[in-house]
Amino acid sequence: MLRSLRIFCDVVQTQSFAEAARRNYLTPSAVSQHLKALEVQLGHRLIERGRRQVRLTRAGALLLEAGQDILERYKQFENTLKQPMTEVTGQLRVGSIYTVGLYELPRYTPIFLKRYPKVDLFLTYLKSVEIYEAVLADRIEVGIVDYPKPHPQLTILPFRKERVVLIVPPKHPWAAKKRVRLAQLHGQPFIIPQAEFPVDEILRKTNIRVKVAHAFDNIEITKRAVEVGLGLALVPYVTVVDEIQRGRLKALNLTGGPFERPIGILIRKRAEVSLPAQKFIDLLITPLKTHTPHF
Image (tube, rainbow, N blue to C red; front, side, top):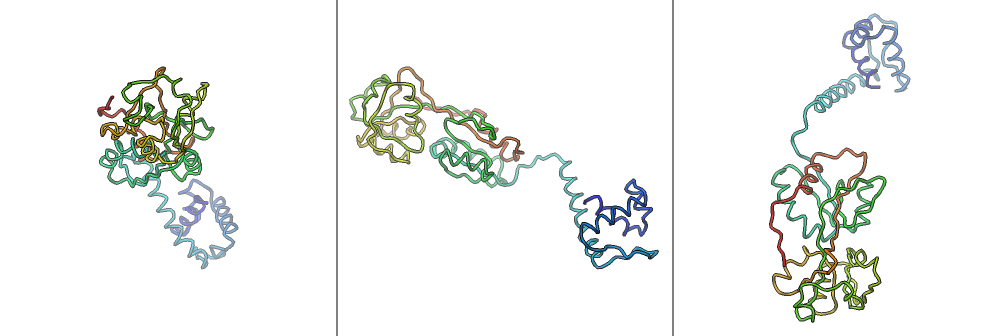
């Protein structure tokens, strides 16, 4: 329809079927056919036939006004596409599981926003299953999950691997240790963060079974429960750095490790990744020059 619209505007502008044909590399009869097809499509006559001068009907006058604007906008659009996209601007929606969004992304988001101040970044905390659904439905452009699982419509990019540790209260009999054997966890009371639970992944292939004392869907409540001696927990080390430094928790490694929780970045396959999203992903997968605390 765009070509027929251009031909129609040329006919009116030049007042000549022959000149419009020359401009569009057509014969005058082909120009007539384009105009007739346009009239059929719109359901209105556009030009009054039988006159030497090209005179428009009411519908033709309306189409001319709208058509000129459409063609001009399309020309601008083509010119924009030809220009290299160098300015990083627009909206970026990211969905992350709670622990990564709270403990990992704060190292990256200030850098990103400082580099690209014209980007409107919207960060949402969601459960893993919700992130898969949101990326597939195009409600978010970038998703960040733990233990990423392959999906035919998603591309998974590795982000990082988080060290998983056992946390105990300061007065626990194991508190003076640096590590414990995995088998020692058998029968121990555990606090389980329901939303993001590395225990399943670590113990799945073993005969070790822990006693679930409490289950919370919040890592902060999980840590507080361990502090007061309600049970033990396996958590990513990055989530307990502050409590360890303050002496409120002790972190132990597990022999046979290191045990790690893989974090992945989800994007839709065959979707054109926006420039803000690409810059954000580039930042995530590029190692930051920061010091990682040890214990």
